[in-house]
Length: 261
Image (cartoon, rainbow, N blue to C red; front, side):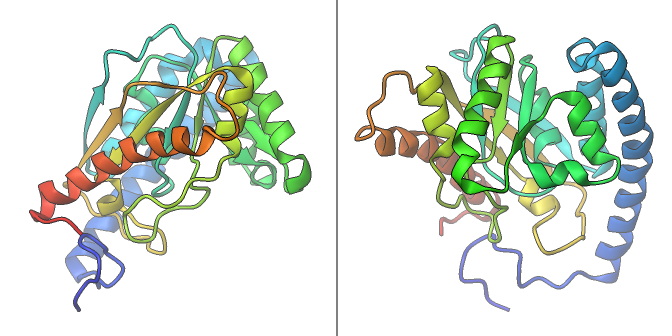
């Protein structure tokens, strides 16, 4: 089946070998995920998430390794390890947070829909970690997210957000929603364009097949300052963040396929 977009995996049919390897990866992933999530939840609720961050990083690295993936990071020297940022990352699959988290030494809080806090096990894990909840009611969403980000920033922590709002279907970067950037502007924070490549080939939205043997790369580009940006300037500043991410994703397409969409 021909693909309209280079690298789009939606038309691929997994072979028996693909299914067998995926089953092994899922077994390894769940075997790693379950005990670590329980342990971290208990430690976060008693000691605080910041004090067990070294274990969170080990958990993240181990979960990516369980998918049979190699992991590499590329962090721009302009990213200050002591400054709180908003890390704006492209949204690919359920491994997004763990694939990016260990790339920098910052303690990062995620941003999740409030309804996700009702999930068994996972919801408790997020609450003990301090994840920023996003209300279902859109009318109060920006204010709630901004206040959550303010709380995180005032503690010297960073925010990890996915401005597309949904996972990619074709491996490319979709349009950005502006809410997280408005909040960053209002709080005087810088945004780090964060591109994760290779993870779409590991697992895509709409499929449970995990394909081992890939290289996952995390790119943290030079921060983009949103402090003092006017409403008129905001779209161009958001596009600067998105363009930096798109460039890395397209480079990965060329690396793999030798051509550009």
